[in-house]
Length: 255
Image (cartoon, rainbow, N blue to C red; front, top):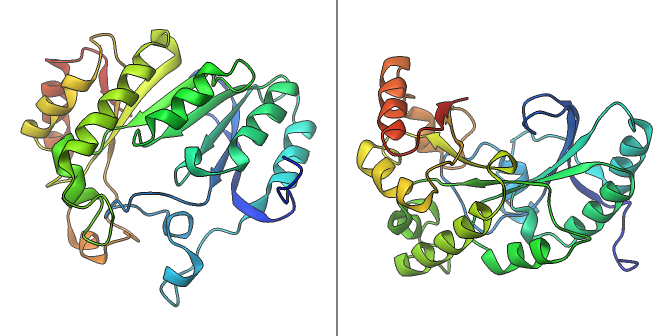
C-alpha cells in the first residue's frame, strides 16, 4: 500500500450519485484501465492508455485517490456508499486500498466488474476486509461472442470463445452467491450485440432471482467510431427485448 502514489491521477470522481448504488446515495470512482475493448464504450479516457488516445479527444479530468479520500471524509454522514468502477477496477492496484479506506470510514462498497477476472473477484470476496457489499457484473453479449465482438483482433483473447464462457460463468456464480438485494447484472442494448438470441444465451448465466438491468445504447463517442453510426433500439424495440428477457429472468428491467 505504501508504494502506491495516492497523489497520482487515477480515476474520474463523481461526487454524488443516486443511481449507481441501488438504495443508497453514494460517490463513484471510475478507475483507469481495462482488459477488454468494448466497441461501444464511451469512457475512452478510462480504457485507452495515453499512447492509444486519438488526438483531439476530450476526456474527463482525473482525480487522485487522495482527493477521493478527502471527499469521503468530508461527506461522512451524507453519503452512505462508494461505487468503484472503471474501466475494470479488479485490474487496478488502487482498488483494495480504496475499499479498506472506505470501509474504515463506514461506507458500504459496490464493485462494478466486467466479469472476466473471477480469481481476482474471488480474492476480494474471500477477504473479510475487502469483501464488497454489492457487486454489479456486466454481461455484454452471448459469452461465445466476446472473443471476436468485444475484444477485437488486437486482444490476446481474440478467438478464445471457450475462455469467456468459462470465466463469465465463474464470475456469475460468485455474484449469484450474494444475497439477491446485494447483486445485479447489467447489459447495454447494443443493436447487433444484444438480440433475442443473445438474451436467451446470456440468461443461462443468471439465477432465477437475478436483478438484470438493461440500459439503452448511446451512439456517441464510441471507442469504435463505426458504432456512432448505429441507431439505438427504439423504445418499442427495447421494451420487446426486456419483455423477452423477463420470460427467463423476472427481474429484468430497463433502467
